[in-house]
Length: 359
Image 1 (cartoon, one colour):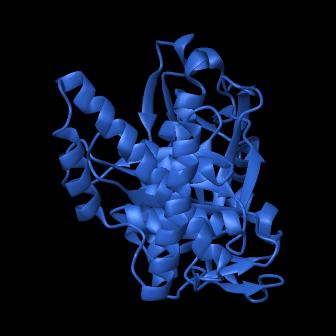
Image 2 (tube, rainbow, N blue to C red):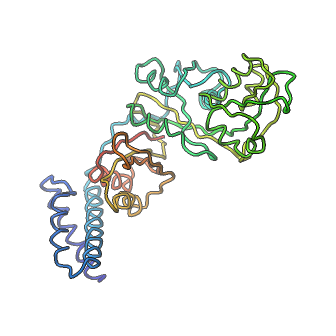
Image 3 (tube, helix red, strand yellow):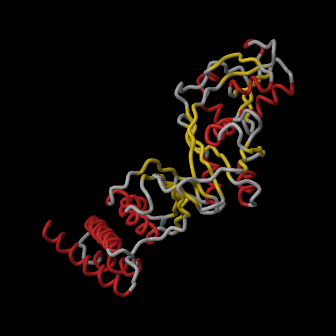
C-alpha cells in the first residue's frame, strides 16, 4: 500500500508539471466527480461504495496538495494585494468607536492608539464600518471575541458585508462593576442595564439576584449614562469602574464577572489593504459546498502544510438555511511557502474566500 501510494504521488508530480506547462488549474471538480462516480459503480455493496468514495476522495485531495506545493516550488505564487509597510502610520489618524465615553471600545482604542488620538463615537458597530467605508474615519475599533461569552457575531458578519480589513488587534482585561446613583444600595436595586455580552459575562452574579430585571442596551457605558440620567436609586448598570468616575456613579459591587481573568479581543479595522511586514497572523473567511466532508477537506490544507490555526468560528449564511460561513485565524505570513500552499488550495476548492486581513 505504501509503495502504491508513493507511486501515485510521483504521478501527481508529473500531472503538476503538465499543469504548470499548460496553465491548467489543479482542481477540476467535474472531472473528479466523474471519476468518483465511475469508481463507485465498481463496488459490490453500499458500505463498500462509501468506503471507495472516501478512499479515493482522500487520494485525490492529497494529490492536489502535492501539486499545490510543486507550484510554489516553481515560483508560481499567489500575490495578495496588501500594501506591506514597516509600520502603519497613525499620525493624524481619525479613529471611531461604538458607544459613549467610558465604553470598553474606547479603553481598547486608547491602549492601541494612545490617550491623545483623534477619536469620536457612533451609535452602532455598523455605523463605525460605514464611516470607514465613506472615509470619515481612518480606523475603527470593534470587539470581536470575549474569553467568557464568546464571539461578537454581528461584527463577524460586518467583516463580510464591508470591504474593510483587519490591521491590528488589542486585548484588554474586562472587570465589570455594578454602578448606581449616589446614595443607592444593593437592596434598592430592581433593574440592571448593560450590553448583552456583559450580562452573560456576569450571569452567575445575576443568578444570585434573580429579583432584578435585566435589560439589554447597546453598550455598557450607554447603560451607565442612562442610570445617571434617570437618577433613580432602583436602577443600576454593569460597566467599567471608569464609567463610575465619568458619570458620577457609585460602585455598588466590583469584579462581578464569572471569569476573574475575563478579557475581550478587539480588532482594528481600516478601509486600506495594508499590513506590517512583521505581521504574523492572517484572518480569512470562506463558504464551502453543503455536503459531507467539505469542512474536513478545507481544514486539511492547514494540516498537511503544518499551518497552525488559532481560531475557527462559523456564522449562518443569510438566505441559505443551515449553511454556514467559516472564519479562521492562523499563524504565518503571505510569503511563507506553507501559507501559499494552503491559500492556493482554499481559493481553488472553496465556493468563496475572503482574506480579512493580516496583522
